Image 1 (cartoon, rainbow, N blue to C red):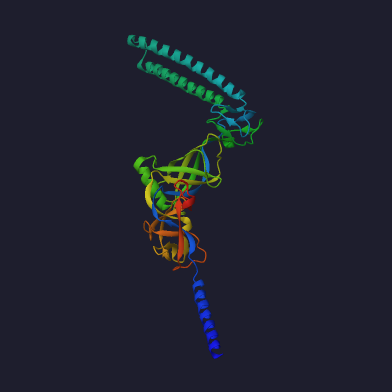
Image 2: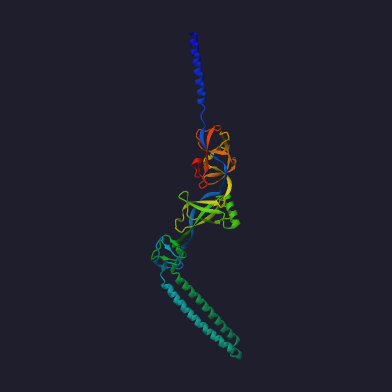
Length: 384
């Protein structure tokens, strides 16, 4: 009996030991599956974005040059007008009468000049014979000169009266869209009336924006080099990320930094043939330097932040994770340029951050970058 009991106890201890070993093995968790991206040199175009506001590239405030009563308004508010179109007509009876009076004055002064010139010619013939004194001859010369000056004055008055008559028709100085106006037939207008209507040319639109110090230095260098900023492409983003159909150009960069804001005023000009853009819109400008340069890029989804700044989780050759602080450069699409902290060929975590700590062992799966969009996808799902 004692031998049987001892044997039974031995068997129980053996089974208990086996269960303990199996339990210890089962407590070691399997490696967590994660997505990793290998840091590599990527051809990138540096870009930055700024907020701007649209304004008309060309606009004119139409004013009256002469006083009078408006007899007709010949345009519709908001309508397209062409350069030279008559916008307003002012009652012109008085101005026509002024032209008639000025013409009669010209005729009278011309007749007076003709008479004075004839008298001077006779005096010059008679003076050598002793029939006229030198003083009389001087008077004849003076009369001829005064008559000539009188004719010139009358001709100038006629010219001014013709100009005034012409200004009774107020013309559109540029082509564009006429804004609202409060002027109707029967209103008295004149130079003191201010703007009668504003005309805005919408075939081109400017976007005014502010540049920081570094952006100003970049653009001013390009401006000095070629005077056309041909190495900077300018795009306008509408509806969030959708690019406007027409590419713009930077047409003005101020030469002084505003003390109040620490920025520089600049403008970009965009074609607007479909008149999709109107003055007063807040828009986003996207600037891209022409020509790609190889740079180390880290995907945006790999970058995290702590009190020390940006960091990434690096997957080592033994598949263990370490946390590393990095220094970022400029934004480039859905990624950042790496200024310091990462080397080509290192792998960073881009998928599977949950419940991972430095020192954990992982089972990495490669993610690759789509050259067209810059977005990441598992290598097996990437287009060939």
